[in-house]
Image (cartoon, rainbow, N blue to C red):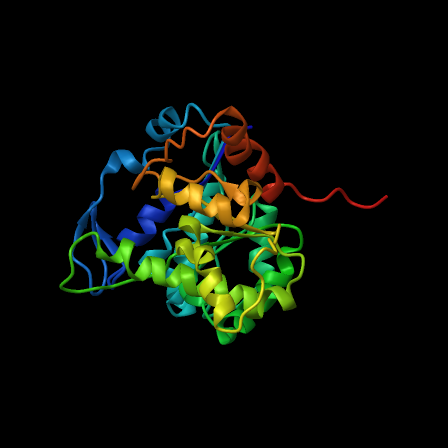
Length: 294
């Protein structure tokens, strides 16, 4: 089963919820308004389920998630929950080949509401990297991570306002910095507390695994010890970066992700075996739940 673990599609209830807001983040028609960022004209076709399904014809499963750079997870609970509930409602009703990641505000940690989304079909939980990039953040969301059990966590870049910078800046600088911090924070503080949790880091974890040599020279540990429960997805990178990550971590923890509609999955051309591993076998290990004990 070919899988893309990282796409975004705003279903109708979520669009309505964004348009109903008087404060940012909000939609005015198809114009997205965020604090500290220029206005963004959303392409309606990008969030048309039928049109997107046609683009996903090569996939058996495309996992969509809340757009964490909107900053919704960090809003006060009274603002965050209506948006998240609307996303869950719409995402659960999307046609094949779509599945979805649950979301949760980090301002109101609620295990029952996470369990409700999981029971509605979510494959796991997405959190913004801004919520898990240090020990304090990981301690705050620990009840949610414990509640996942054998379901995975997906860590995605969060809000990254950067006034006065080129349009590409947020995706290349703060997104990467956030993912880098989240990778090492989970290694240092998250893994000891959640020894069996499967975690997938967007955009190859900001290439953080390639800094293991520096980590060792500065007193860290772990080079050569691959954590089979920590996965990285390929969005916005290409052959050179993915090849470097494979040399560091091995191919078994690399999974296919596109960030569609903002990017496309890389054409890696590593051969049929590698393609099967990245698009089929490795996502299956990330997403498959354990069979209950008899």
